[in-house]
Length: 258
Image (tube, rainbow, N blue to C red; front, top):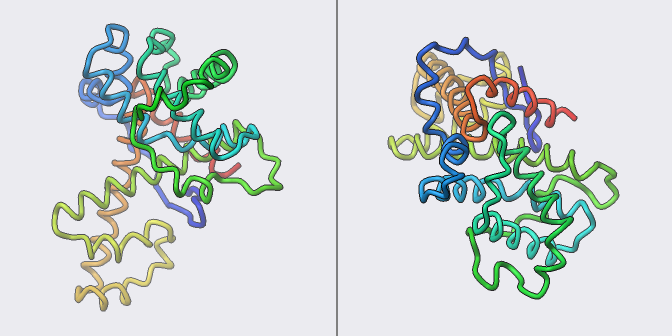
């Protein structure tokens, strides 16, 4: 199975069957924490929500820009939305049976844009307080559309969500390799995630790393295996139950292919 990223194709294999013992650990993921504890406004739930928002602000910004807002207005809208999301009891509206973070966030944004933005214009960006750190400097170059593009805001949101999720996966993988003192290995092997096995130049990589070709093949296999694990773990952070992971993965592939 493959997905098309910004200019790359990331290859994954079919998901292994869920292990019976996997479900108990699932309750520790971010969105399930938010759903189970959010209605009582616990610090743990708020912290989990803030981490999710910090990771996935970009799809919302791209959505707001596609609606025709200028970059400064889109920045104000995005920051004000997060200020209200974190300050108000928006989570009470999250239905645990339909509680995917991706869908919840877009629905909450639409509600904000329709009913609350006019009232917030006099008090930009949460009254001067930035609810989560957001770097808008590169937002315009990676929104996922061109000036003449006619792609809908919803499709822009879904595609940007998928790309952001893949970026999170690569970031987490890189951190693991850096922590293990294997940053050079990761940087050399990372391109193999976007290549079919038959096209990977194992001998060239082996020469650059001073490894045997066989050792490189093993390292590539392990990286791809770990990539699949981290991909599903990242998705699990944004859904309410283990049963939703595979369906969300299919949605991700569909968004990238569209």
